[in-house]
Image (cartoon, rainbow, N blue to C red; front, side, top):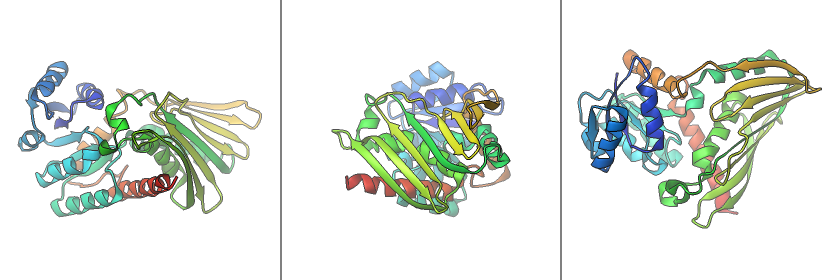
Length: 318
C-alpha cells in the first residue's frame, strides 16, 4: 500500500524508518509546508515524492493512506482535508484537540465512508493482549490499585510549550496514562480528581490524575515535561503485583507475589519500532472496506477526548 506522511518532524522520521522495513508498505510521499524540508526528508528516507503543501499530496491519486504527524492543534483540519478527499487516515494521538472535534470527524467518516483511526500505538501492540491475559489469570488476585507514569524532558520542544499548538503534558504524554488505565480496567468511572502545575506559557507542565471506578478500584497516573520518569505501570493485587515496563512502549511484564518473589517474566515480541501494528491493521481494514479500527474505534477516541476535556476543565479552575 502506498502511504504518504503528512508532516516531517521527529515522529514522522520514526514512522518513515518503520515503513521502509515493512514488506506490505511503499513509503510513497511526504508533505511539509516547507518544500525544502519535505525534499530533505524524502532524500533521507528514500521517498520518491516530496510536496510543499499538504493539499498537493492529498490530491495525488496514488496515495492510498495518509499518516498525520503534525501538532495536535492541526489534527482536526488535516484529517478533514484527507477525509473530504477520500484518503484513508491514521492520525497521531491525541486524536484531536477537543471531543467536539473528534465527534465532527466521526460524522465526516460516516458521510464519506473513509477509514480513519487514531494512531495511539499501545492500543495496537501485542503487549495489550499479554497484559490483559495476566490480569485475567488471577495470578495476583483482585486488583485494588493501579499506578502509572510517563514523563520526558520535552519542555524545550516548541509545540509542547505553546497553547496555540495544543501543548502541555496531558495531550502529549498523559494520554498514554489514561489509555493504559481505561484499556486494562474499563470505563466504569465514578469520578476523576486532578492536581496540576501550569507553565508560564499557560500549558500543563506536570500533573497527577486520580481515577476512581464505581467498584472502588483506584488508578493514579502522573505526567510531566521536565524529565524522564521510570514509565512503569503497576497493578496491585491481593496476592501480589504486576509491573509493566514502560507504558509508552511495553518491553516486559513481571509478576511478583506478596513477598516480592518473581513469579513470572514475560517479554513482548520483537518489533521494528512498535508503529508497525497500527499501520498493518489500517492496511487490512482498508482492503476489507472497513472505516474504523478494531483496536481504537472512533467512539473510543471520542471517549478519551471527553475524559481529557473534563480534566483540562479541572486544570482551568486551579
